Amino acid sequence: MPTNPKQPWTVRDVPDQTGRVAIITGSNSGIGFEAARVLASRNATVVLACRNTGKAEAAASRIRSECPGAKVEIQLLDLGSLESVKQAAESLRTRFPRIDLLINNAGVMVPPYGKTVDGFETQFGTNHLGHFALTGLLLERLQATPHSRIVNLASQAHRMGRIRFDDFNFERGYRAWPAYGQSKLANLLFTYELQRRLGKAGAGTIAVAAHPGWSRTELQRHATVKWWNRVLYPIVGSCLSQSAARGALPMLRAATDPKVTGGDYFGPSGFLEFTGDPVRVESNQRSHDAEAQLKLWQASENLTGIVYGL
Image (tube, rainbow, N blue to C red; front, side, top):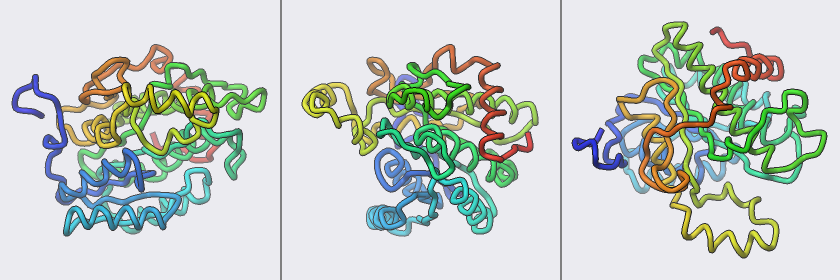
């Protein structure tokens, strides 16, 4: 923490990570890459868990060039395939006797309608179910590691989200933004239910969440398909958005601040939480609906076939 509590939390406040292993999904670019770069510079062994291993190798090379001696490894992971998730989890369990940080960062945002190889709507399947499965498969290793953390990346879009328990896949009229909102609300419902179960089990592992505000990354590439978005987005974004490096700060604080407690949620401090210093923030009332948390958990276990030992 900053010496003066009124000072903003920055990368300088990330503690030394020597001996710790951090797995970050979707970390070949954007805020995931920025978080990986910082953690590697603090001596963590960082695993870039990505769908495109070529891009991941290029990202790892960048980090090693900036941080000589950095420990960066690659893991193939396609969150849109439960088989890939299972294979990745088996590989990670074999390669690493400890896992200190699992940062579920990867995601897709407002793509055209599509389904994962397992038949789930792309955003729900990738952003939520893929991470739900990965976390469950790595949970035993996480619980065996003292002071481990699971960090789930949410979004202000959770505020527009509703969980379609009778139509997760938006087969009755797909709209990209509501589907994205559903997946981001699911990330928070999952975080809070996971923390409740970890706390009840007396586990040393905690589950927390963060959101990056409006960060300039490749994630928004589908948001500018319409011509008016291509015109307005750069103008509005230049005033209300921040860099990927700044967007990574809430994630990094959630992952490394010694004062974080289970169930905390971090985001930017500024207007509408679009930009600013990383602080504790509040998610909406729907995300704290205990009945919805449990219902989504049970549905996620049924859909993925991954049953947690909690």
